[in-house]
Length: 191
Image 1 (cartoon, rainbow, N blue to C red):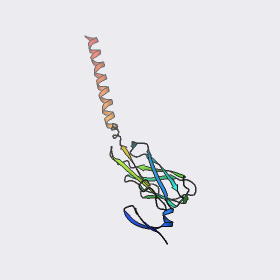
Image 2 (image 1 turned 45 degrees about the vertical axis):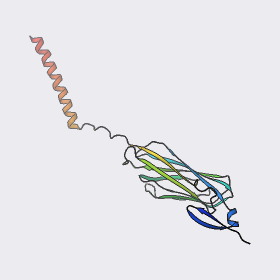
Image 3 (image 1 turned 90 degrees about the vertical axis):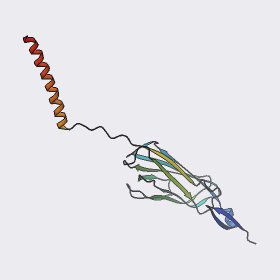
Image 4 (image 1 turned 60 degrees about the vertical axis):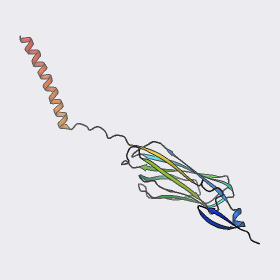
């Protein structure tokens, strides 16, 4: 006699046979940012870790990251045996990395680098969400998604540099003032 169980996964009712119930893998994702705050127009690095808390190996494992608005892809470093699909450098999009398996108790670490648009206003908050998934049922749903936020620092524009005309006026004014001082000093000597 085959036993059937019903579980709720991501808000959907799913029916599983007793054999499928044994195949669970608790994937957990963490993501951190550096630097925070980040200066507009510079790079921001995300450290992403995918952990399989077991009890079984995870197969057809994937992490995905829809790059936040106001950022563009620069690079990603991934562990061996992971294949990543990425947008072109300097564009937005989705980064997805896959592996055939991740053993129970193992982890995979990634570093994703994006560039923050120099047009973002001071105080803008960038929110980045990373999701992990596998073919197996997640025994602890909810921790396979992680989000981090980063505040953008946009320095004020530099002070304008005087043009040649402005410099000429400053120099001319200085020469006039110096000339007037010399004239007054000579006039006093004559009196």
